[in-house]
Image (cartoon, rainbow, N blue to C red):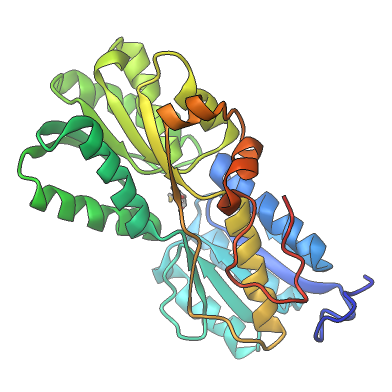
Amino acid sequence: ADGLSGAPAPFDKGGVKVALISYISAGDFFQAYQAGAEAQAKALDIDLRVFPGRQDAAEQREQILQAINLGVSGIVIDHGLPESLGDVVQQALDKGIKVVAFDVNLNNPKIPQVEQSDHELASLALEQVVKDNGKDFKAGYVYVAGFAPLDRRNEVWDKFKSENKGVTEKARFGNVSDTTATSTADQAKAALTANPDISVVFAPYDEFARGVKLAANDLGIAKKLKIYSADVSTADIQEITEEGSPWVATVATNPAVVGAVSIRAAALEIAGQTVPHQITVKPTLLTQESLRAAGVKTIEDLAAKIPAFSTSDAATASWIPDKLF
Ligand code: SR1
């Protein structure tokens, strides 16, 4: 470790140990988030220990204890179930370890919370739904309770339905696992078969949208269905822009930028500098039409066209390199 010249201690010496402890590692969003965290850690000469997430609350608790024993200075917790984390996170804080949470409400004033402005994300998606479909339609909705970002997006969906009485939620389904897209596809097939009048599906997680698209294609109903999602990846852009795709819009950040912001927040905390309690990375609406018109094929194309996809001004400092992508 060489350290960063001009950086505050302990980053002037380098090799600061930080753990990234995820609840979910499978899927484009989480892989890109991790890659962004790794790139930012490298730029800060941080020794990043990555603990893979397997949707297992007990394992995530165990990983936090392992990180404490490793003598890390900071821990970034990426998703998880708050009820199973409180006591082990408190053990870390009691040892002077700085903790940053992404998309899991740890409800502690000492823990900065990173999120993608999920209320705004869902509102932008639903505004596009109304633009394309009006306010009178039958909908399918993909949701799994207990995940902070999905719960926040759900608050917006509930409000949207109560303000638009012409919108009827005919079916609700969803699954979060290491096979989210294919399991959701099986559920979507059953829901869409039982409710042939569904014309709109709100699927605010890209793995959900991918599952609904699979189902629509298998059932041969892609032409009469429109899918609205959250998140974006190069594979998603391909699925959204391909000929005849029912996936017509998504609202997204660059997950790699969110990963980088999470590490920067931990670094600022470790350096004893001020970090806001709420750290937000704002999402952008991406429609099928706009992606096709701009010839966007990859997340790198997006980063070249939309500044928010290459960096964020959240959790920055003059000593932290932040141009990573
Ligand atoms: C199971 S939660 C999935 C969501 O987490 C992140 O916030 C992503 O945006 C994804 O939609």
